[in-house]
Amino acid sequence: MILITGGAGYIGSHIALALLDRGTQVLILDNLSTGNRWLVPAGAVFVQGDCADAALVTKLVADHGIAAVIHCAGVISVPESVEQPLAYYDINVGRAVALFAAAIAGGARHLLFSSTATVYGAPDVDGLSEDLPLAPVNPYAASKAMVERVLADVAATGAVNVGVLRYFNVAGADPAGRSGQVSKSATHLIKIAAEAVIGKRDHVLVTGNDFGTPDGTGVRDYIHISDLAAAHLATLDALTAKPDASLTFNVGYGHGASVLDVLDAVDRVSGQTLRRIAADRRRGDVARLVADTRKIRSQLNWQPAFDDLDRIVADAIAWERKLAARPDPAA
Image 1 (cartoon, one colour):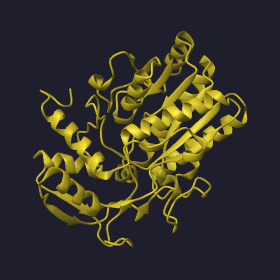
Image 2 (cartoon, one colour):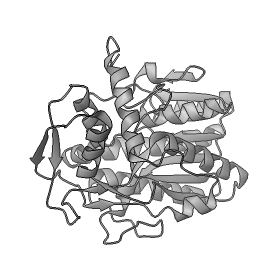
Image 3 (cartoon, helix red, strand yellow):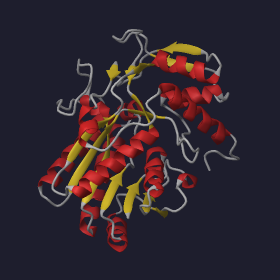
């Protein structure tokens, strides 16, 4: 059985679906501070609780024979982290340390961590490779980099082996419509644009048009959520097969799309023309984040199945329409 923290959220629920689809038992631990109980897939064991509750985590790991923990719980907004750095270090670092200690005490031997491409900062290179030095430029990114260092030191003791996945821009939804992104105040571009398509918003802000990119807007490597979930399964298999090896991978496609590219795709897929309003850059944003994906493609049995911006957008819009039809989308 695999324990997923934050499994009632966007990324955790898709990882749970992928594991369940291949017949692996899943236990989800989520305090529902931002997650949604209805996103927990049928077939998963659900426990409402905090990942920093050491007694609870140790007991769950021991009682259920948990061999691996996938840590997705945390807070993720760059602008919010600039405004509330202490909260980000408390939740993303302090609670992660408590979780890892309790999981190891309970008998877990593999830890898989949701990190971020923003740990690289803003180096002047086209594709960000895993051997670049970490240079986070905002508290969110710094909190993730700190946890990576914690895990490296823990792995060096031999108590566990560790997988770190540095996500690029995750978007889209489960192609079967079983899960997707739910947020009371969305900050991700494709999510925001999908809300505009269904009339939940009357415009989309273009935050910054003076970056050093071809059209002046920020460029990101957008990856479909289902491909990201598949990368977790491939990494988990590698950790299990080689318990003395720890792994770090970028998870993206290796090519970028600007804000305007994304909005053009949304217009194309939806058949609408969204209203665009220019706005100032968001604090902490960088011009370009695109992955060098050669390492994950060569070392893992992982090949993307949804590497198409229009497909990502189409699945996001389909999910948004399904979400809008719920009596209470946040319930």
